[in-house]
Length: 512
Length: 97
Image (cartoon, rainbow over all chains, first blue to last red; front, side):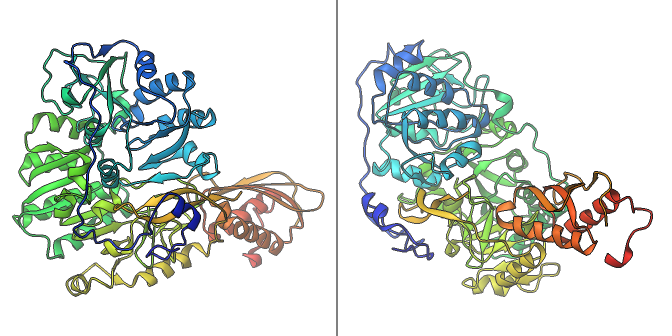
């Protein structure tokens, strides 16, 4: 069978896992039945334990699904501590269902796969040695990649049934009231972990900072928590996010950012009360700076900024140019601190952020979104998952979710080194071209032909050359040459779900 | 053109290629390291080989560390490395450039 973006999907696997191929970006109005977690009733007086081992023995059994969050990013000390104990306890056949996997977890995941401890994985993404391991067939069952919004949907549906969630927090009280804002290793919003806290059968908090009861503000509540484990350190604050956000001086990135800003300001969405989401890359941060000046010049204020938040965005909040920041995760310390001090920066969970099967998610209200791409093809399909060698090295993140915004801009250089970004067909389709509106490269922009309204308003702007995307692709190929097609085996190592839970593409084992 | 000594041209900066050319008894062998080897490896080796042959080099050992260089860069670095290895930098063979 094939998905609507013309990708062949393996029939046997699709039927075995009861999957449907991706059809449309339209979600419609289905009626959804959500699930509820088991509750182990307690008055809460005996939740605090000193030993991870004791909790693991009490909670984790063969064949269960366990989860973690990735808010500590590469400063995470929790994942490796817990997985060490689980591997050593000889537990087998677990499904690992974290919000995402960061580089610091890679070696431990590989060890757990080799030991038979982990036999299934669902994640937003993976990189480095783990991506390499999986792409070379290291895990028997295919990894299931889900966007942040889709993970929330899958948890609410029961597609992901978390038995035990291990959630590291920089501050908690003895009953489990916890937040991500106070303590040593602070990361701000607990957005992704809030799903696990709400839906896991058993919730284990790990903290190096047990504070007086009751701890407020409480992002995770005592009503959700089974255990509070005291550990020496939950994370390394220096590795959680980039420290001070530095603006790029790369002329190519600045040119792209300036053109992205031109696209935004000439679009019909740039008016008082508009909303936007930017990423954390160099060009995206620079867009925020250009956009700030345009907002001041035109006396326009934004109603909200959404998504992964950085300091340049919270600066706009402090200046009054953005009225609210809706914050599912913080990429730097400035943004994390701001959540603590600024009441207009609202912590939101992944469902509120981006779950399509909802009574309205924030992304449904989004006007302008700027996203990146490893590759984009002449159908505007975007790959953020596999690299130029076909190996897994990325994450869906909120890409598919935010792309449903009214004006979705992909900002990317035409080529990176000898690798073309604009290609005839992306290696892996993650976000379908139907939800992408404009591509901005340093040479010019391409507008999705379906957006005739945008072609009309963006076609005669000085300094903003408009090309057909096929022409940009040819320009790229002329520069770098024609690559030899990548070689894969028939074995499926990963499935890429669309945000509605259908399968849009697969990743095959690389041949080398 | 005869390779007289081992010589290097190019850097390890991105979009560059570093080539080390040394003596060999016969034939051209290329040891290529590149992040884009899977998709451009054959092309990179072809550019090096063609350039060497155009300069009359029939026996050489080449070690190439590519950082995503375009063909024009690969050609230029190959020419420079050969001239250094053949000790002809003072009298470059302009006609093959």
